[in-house]
Amino acid sequence: MKTVAITINGSESSNVFPPMILGSAAAASGDQVILFVTPGGAPRFLKGKLEEFKDSKGLPDIVELYNGILDLGGKVYVCELALEAKDLKKEDFREGVEIVGATTFLNEAKEATITFSF
Image 1 (cartoon, helix red, strand yellow):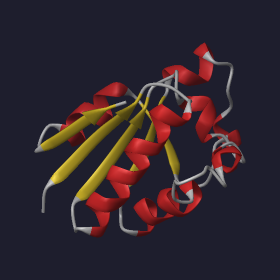
Image 2 (image 1 turned 135 degrees about the vertical axis):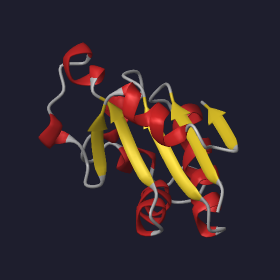
Image 3 (image 1 turned 135 degrees about the horizontal axis):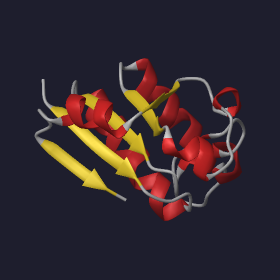
């Protein structure tokens, strides 16, 4: 099993769709997937915010991609710095999001054979 580590650095569709598509494909292929969301991307992972991208022409359902990653054992980490930097609360994030420090991500991703950043 390979580990695929992907960072999400913004909250626009161009920052979020590629990681979700690549992450779900990797998870479906049996790879361990770790998504790390920086403060810039964190607001998109609040409850109800991925749904704003539903019905994006020519793109898959982003909520299904997100759920597929989690269902296949993937991890979605949001950097703890986002809480203060973006004035966000842990309980406002969607189900499946874990709030962690960069050290946790780096420790788990150090064996990654494939990395992406969007």
